[in-house]
Image (tube, rainbow, N blue to C red; front, top):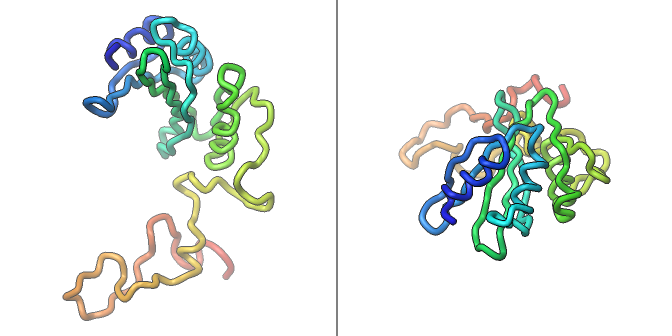
Length: 189
């Protein structure tokens, strides 16, 4: 099946919108489904004989700022040798989507990591305990608003500030790295 046919087949079976990502031999059907249909879309992709996506590859998220978070899973058919990217978007204010662990038990680790790094809850997950960060850690480090404390506490180690050219001889005021607030807005006074 071509990526277009894979996307069209899944759209026949569940509500959503299909597109193709990548190109040539690496092209994948990409299907966007509403959050309420997330787990069902994963189940259909696995159980439909034409799709037969029986291998769960990975799951993660993308912080889309005001648009919320895109939760993305990559599924693979070992019999038909095709892949499928399945996406849903959850709102930033209440980032919750159903777990897919009952469908693919291997998703447990991926959902725990995504929960810890982005703060997305997976309703029905058997154990969303911390996976990578120490217990005293506060925040979700892969969210775009997360402040990179190391960039605030430690000065730039290079001879030039980022963006300075070789020709520039005058020292300019230090530049704040992206995502780092101005002095006095964060940290100890």
